Length: 432
Image (cartoon, rainbow, N blue to C red):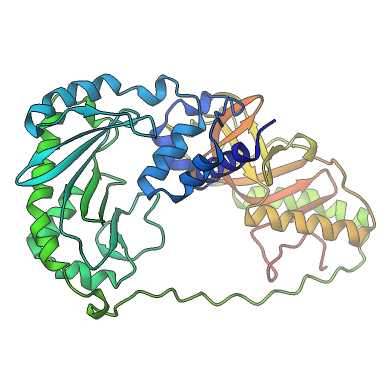
């Protein structure tokens, strides 16, 4: 039995993976082969709470590192970290220390260019971080994220591919920097998921494509980027040493989005079950004909990791799956069908199209006075191009996430999820 603290840690970790599965699968190849039951939840309540309060980069590292056993996967760049550190130590005048609490990040503290500096080396991803001290600034805290970063969120763009997160008006603050400084920041952050932060008298960047530490000249790249960081530090101290309340619109305030008015549920009218059944198969066949040009054979499936680009947007017909065979994944169910590693299809029951299908089935039962029970669902779905990881057949499987287009339930009823009446999709024969 998991303790309350362990359950909370598991919940945080799982939520992170649900929200950022695509990123996790890209940077953690092989993670899908790990059983979903091998999770390592040995964190106390204080650790679980601290995982939520860490800054975003540390949160990412901490949750990932504590979620699964520290197998070789998490230390695959350890020897590279030692090699690069040995070359950096005489340059910075410091020694390699660590690992940090996340168990994957090492650092070297030193001095350069008249400032205290720090270089972080990540033995799981093979990336690096650089930092230097700066004056305490009135802006308090500010982050710039490359648009592919999982932390970029719904924040404003300040330059192509760069977003800024700050309590203040982002664009005017960015434009206060000299052109040369802005151009240098853009160049430094060209790698996907790069980030920059100013907080508590510290200017830092997380840089490098995955595996950079394995390059023979990694230490040269790190020193060059550190020198560029030191070059922009004076401009940041000068340009952002202002009262941000009087820059642009001042404090950025959250304007709540108007909440949509609840839509009244569709009225249920009595229908004859036999008549609806006679409409079901033709409606299913008509949808397949409609998508014939986009349809591909379901199996053999393309790899969701290495071949997904060639099947994005394609339509597949899944073999029928009764609800009793669906996979339970915390708060939702998932239809999971597959044949080999990375070659699965997943249709989540909490996705909008699938939700409309389930509501239509419930209306069908009330309209006909019958029960569908464990009748199999034959799903027509579109490949979204987003990989998913689901525990099925006793281990974590990777596959294609599907958008629900339609479903034939047994031979009783067909629902076209692409056609909507208000917030719902009708079953064939519901209105005529």
